[in-house]
Amino acid sequence: MFAPVLVDDFLKLSAKLYPEKEALICAEQRWTYQAIDKACRRLARALRLIGLGPGERVAIFLDNSAESVISLFSAMRAGGAFIVVNSSVKPRKLEVILRDSAASILVADAARAAVVAEAAKGIEKLKTIWVGDTSEVPASFGGRSFLWAEIFQKSDWAPVASHVNAQGERAIDFDLAALIYTSGSTGEPKGVMSSHFNIVSAARSIIEYLQNTAGDKILNVLPLSFDYGLYQVLMAFMFSGTVFVQKSFAFPVKILECIKQERITGFPIVPTIASLLLKMANPSKYDLSSVRYVTNTGGVLPPAHIRGLQKIFPCAKVYSMYGLTECKRVSYLPPEQLDLRPDSVGKPMPNCRAFIVDEKGKEVGPDQIGELVIKGANVMQGYWNSPELTQKTFRPGRVPGEVLLYSGDLFRKDRDGFLYFLARKDEQIKTKGERVSPKEIENIVCELEAVSEAAVIGVPDEILGQAIKCFVVCRPGSKVGHREIINHCSKNMEPFMVPRYVEFLEKMPWNAHGKIDRSLLRTLEADGPVNG
Image 1 (cartoon, rainbow, N blue to C red):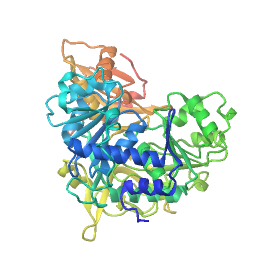
Image 2 (image 1 turned 135 degrees about the vertical axis):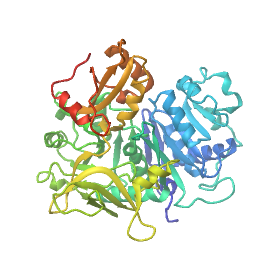
Image 3 (image 1 turned 135 degrees about the horizontal axis):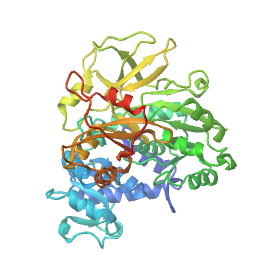
Image 4 (image 1 turned 120 degrees about the vertical axis):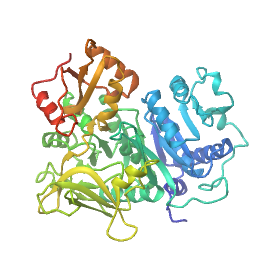
């Protein structure tokens, strides 16, 4: 038996230990570890024959599915790295990600061929593997197209040894495993570089405090493009558990039925899901006694929501957590502390340190406000193609080689060492568990000819955590309506980014530094949203 050091080693080990055990359930498909392992070996071989080189990226543009899971593990097994792209992205963002990452292969749903065709214009070297009915795939893809179904029918694309690239070199744990794209303050997505070492370290720490075992069954309704959703699969394969992957939480009743029928033990949620559960009529009528833990991140849960979840899941421990894509997870609150510190996100997880510093980088004392800084093997490698942003966020520590992650988030720590999240320094918005850049929305709204200025803020929302509100100033003599702005946004961004509220102003407030005064906009919001 070997010592697992790479992410895909855990799949390989689980397949040896539990070949006939169910590893992955997606809709009606139920995959054993042996079947998943075999499929990954075959696809990895195909990726190499198609032309995947050492360290090159495979972009995955699919809904949550077995094909998504097989693709990401196969990319690593072939000596490359994977990128899971949110299946709801519009052509413009898909193009940015494909060009920025220089992905050489794209695995895409054939039903989204039109989106891919627009995004991939001029990207001559990109090769695409199509999943599903390919009748709508444009002929222009020609020899750059491959069919998922045919890959698993070709006898010459036989399984090969894992983690050995086309040059015969075996991967090491410092190699790139994934690029996870997240919104940036510039308005463009940025790719967080995650090595095998980073992912394995972060996952092991989370598994330790959740006390996961091979008997756990995890229900994941979060997108795999979201690191919180992605790690549910990676972690389950590490501890040889079973993961149920759903496309979304769109049908809560079906999700609760799944928990009941499959005897789910672990249920990761975001505040939006908590709010929807609490609005359901009598969720306690379902037998949810199998759930031993519920985790939450993506935003701090109000204490009332925590109490409500404890009633819905009477046998479960509720974990409040805090994390960043740049390090996956930072802290968790032990469930026994919920009644004492319901608004805390706890203490650093195993193998991770966190402290709070002032503007000069000096550590502050209890109950003082400052920026949270993280240290540990879970701190990722930086931002792809963004050396200046990497240098700003990932800074040298006190000893040679040490890297500290500056979170950009304001925190305080009580006298017992428990952490409390206060605000995000960069003004980013958390809605539906997703991190959204106001600048990205503002850029798109300002594309409308009638719009002179746009400013976006997050406003409190019981369901979403924060709803997106856009303030608009029109050009002199021009006029645009609320519906026109919403329609334009819907065509050019993911659904969770579309503003819920639009308010028109005659003049945008500015501060002394020549920047939009967002604090004043929040004051205006107190008068109530206007839908123009």
